[in-house]
Image: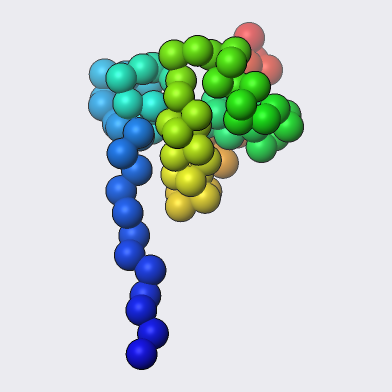
Length: 90
């Protein structure tokens, strides 16, 4: 008998329309998941380096953000693209 994996919630991730326009952030901060993805996956920063650079982020929260990314890859990729294009316009 095969057990299916149970989808768990991301306890370090929250959404609130008043914070970053409702995009997913690290709970208790304004730090968006897309930024963690940018630094770690796109720029190659180690999660431990990111935790040292942004001391208000725990390593567990960073890894949860990465897990959230893989569960919601299309959404986060769209957010990355929108914010990248917005920075080009500035």
